[in-house]
Length: 565
Image (cartoon, rainbow, N blue to C red; front, side):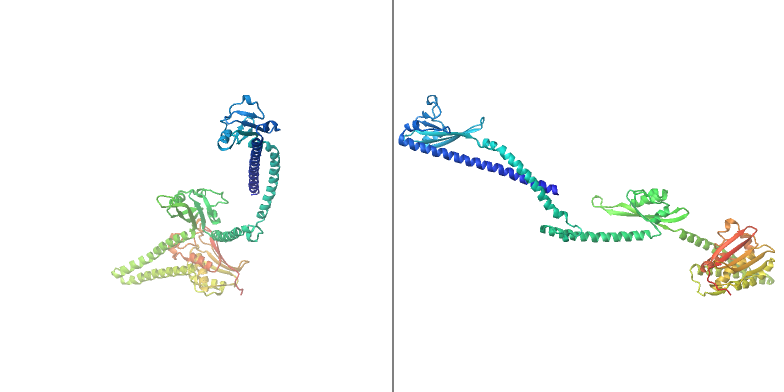
């Protein structure tokens, strides 16, 4: 800016100086020319007056200088006298411009220029009383010649003035710009600057406030967006129309197993599956879609929504996709629960169908009179057994439903695990006696805070399975003792054991390791599932240790909220 102001001031100064130089020279030259002509005319009038008084003899007595040339011309144009030339060899002057005007009007003048020597000759003629014409001529330099003659001294002056102008222009430009350099554009109204700039500074200050408000608003929105997306467990990705990633959250990177992806990377670098590619391409065509995708044994639901922009420059006036937003939801648990629900429904249907079929068959035989009188009690007993089996199954299902929905009535109290275990072994004595199973209880009286009914069902189901799936002359031992982590209940048997492949599934609903043996010993297949949910209700940890033909041990550790008796 300083350079621009300097150049402007300097060029204006130079142009002004040159203009003044040429204008002044022209005025001086013109003024000198006028003075020069007036002098010649005055001299001519003086000589005319003398000639009218003294006649031609005056010309022979007059002391002529070298400046003026005097010529006397007769009425017929003949030159009678010339102060610089021999009249005998001079031509007739009748048709000379100044002479012709003098004969006609009494006086006349003319100027003749010589371009070769740069001179001009001024001729002034005046008529005498006797009709003759006296002419005075003088030669001087032309205006241009005079001006060129003045160039050298004036050029030196001009150069000096230009240098001074440059120095002054530099100082003036710096002086002008200095207050502008001190303007505080953050707070322009507080700047000490030219009064003429005050309206502009006020406008800048107002715009600064508007821009700052907009920036603060954008920052808040950006921070809110970042806070929301970064705290989402769902993956979030924004891509442009060329599939390049514009924004993402950490959850998305964790899902795809990527760390610090490079900028402008294609979304297809994260996942190259055909289903995912087709979904992205469809969204970029303006068609929203969703599908399921399995990544590292996890099931995700991918929602890909098109982001469109209405652009008037398109002749068809339709929406055109400028990118897409991708939301990734982890639905593994949901899908597993849905799978379990379907399996549970199928298993319940199957388990209920078997006793209902038996009941219906026995009832139909009795109804049709195909049973002897003495066999009716036997058939009735079978109907009763199957009905009890259904009632037990429905009861277990309702209990599991309550545990799943956390709708068990809150009846927590101090429960002595040792006493509960002792009572359960008493109830299992008859079942154990059939296979000559020895029951043993060891440990100490320890209490936990919990639901007495659920705790009873947990211990009973584990102990009942230990008896049912034991070997003849086997043994079941229940231990209750204290650990650093809490009260530990351990149920160990010498039974058939559980294969390694089935250990993770024995707590599933209706899952049976040996289905043929299970049918013989009965049960609903929900016992260990109730144990699992009951332990979860009490924040207890379950540990299962088993080997085929070597027995099974199930440990349940309750948190340290018990009281020792």
